[in-house]
Length: 145
Image (cartoon, rainbow, N blue to C red; front, top):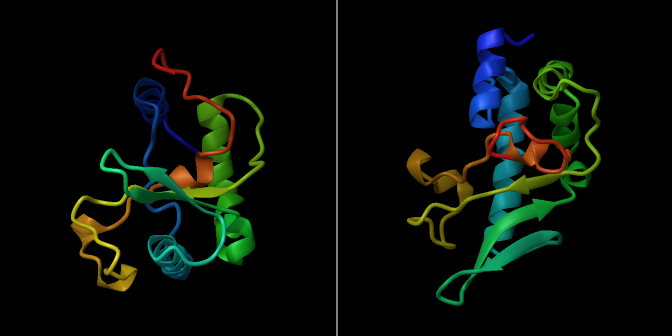
């Protein structure tokens, strides 16, 4: 259950970091599987990876779809009861996750030859909860939506 301070922060900024929500073995498996998906996306291997054209004409990996089909951990985390409760509180209404994707932002220093296991933390692809919430047709309720 979120505090009023957390809800206010969410409605002001449009995001909320829920530290400690996913932990232990579940977090380790999630990170391991996300690293595998990211490695495939960077290497342009496998299916359901999306790329954007950069200003210099290069294609940049930015998203992977069909996460629930890739490994059970992605669905398990998506339907985590505490996460669903917190998101429901933020939205103030009933909702359901209807699609799934992993949205990534590759750091400038990151080159395709790096494998996720060799990434330094400052070069790590930003995961956050964006892969969970990117397809939940909902806004933060802030004036900036």
